[in-house]
Length: 203
Image (cartoon, rainbow, N blue to C red; front, side, top):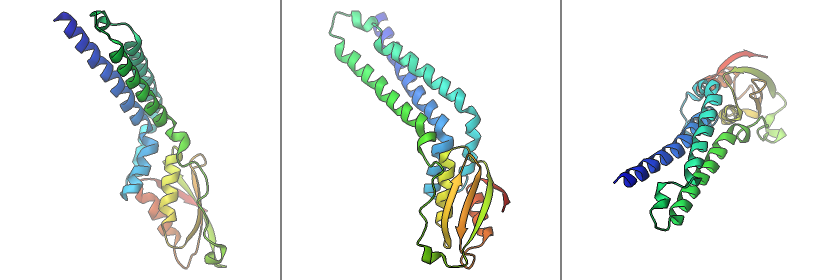
């Protein structure tokens, strides 16, 4: 009975550490993944996700701690290995589990460096821009990663009259080339602020 309790306790702890690692990594990346999901759903509030950014280092530390405990439990020789039966299948399963969790955590942790970036959106054909195309630069408050930049770029690219968009979260600005006969600057600002970000200036 005592051995069964010990095995069940260890199994519960192992699953809790794996789940904790994945959830904390997800929470640490929500400021980057969240805006893309929100934008894809077509709802506002993407800019609110940046409020999680200051907690990202602490959440990543929690993730590493959970993974460390998970690896310790997966690779140590526990009471369940001393029961006289072949414990190799169980050890293999729990080690596969912790490695799958590690891959998932690595993907989530890399999200800020993989999504969005500051690349320009593909420009339309030059002929479609017309001779009266103009360029405006909007300073945007609230962008913290490539996911934010990708969200803003996607929202602006949907507007009729927008020729090209370049968004940089590092410089906290968007450079938009547009046709004033088809779209106004106010509409560009509204599209950005609908996401939850704030346009602080234009030039």
